[in-house]
Length: 185
Image 1 (tube, one colour):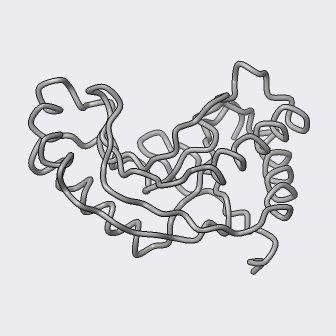
Image 2 (cartoon, rainbow, N blue to C red; image 1 turned 90 degrees about the vertical axis):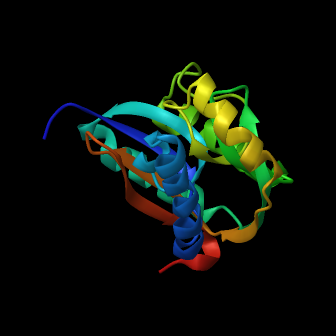
């Protein structure tokens, strides 16, 4: 198949935590008719969606594989909820310094090895796991946020790989996992 595909790069928690966060997304859908966040698995974005020609896919995979082998696993703590204005509700990441560092190193690789334009990469990130976005309007936000603002949520997972996700035309699929040096399959 020729042409460009849409991808993004993320940290993805283990299956059980993904299922727990999906329950939150399902609640958003059922109670507030907010469902856009269900189009992707629970994740922390490292590189927002980008288009690449399908002929460059193997270069991307090879680059991310080499990059991941240089990384050390680390723990990620989640606690409570946050929001960006009235457009996004998310699970908070506590002490995101290691994620921000990983993102910075990844940006360097994307620019050097895959010739990403500096405008294609996100310079600064605020690590989080989205549970409501895009179809979250002001009215729905005002209904949902007071409830989530006070709700407790605590979890942790070990980041031991990065993931390349690929859009299938309707939603995001996990396309490839790149294990950090201690977690080779």
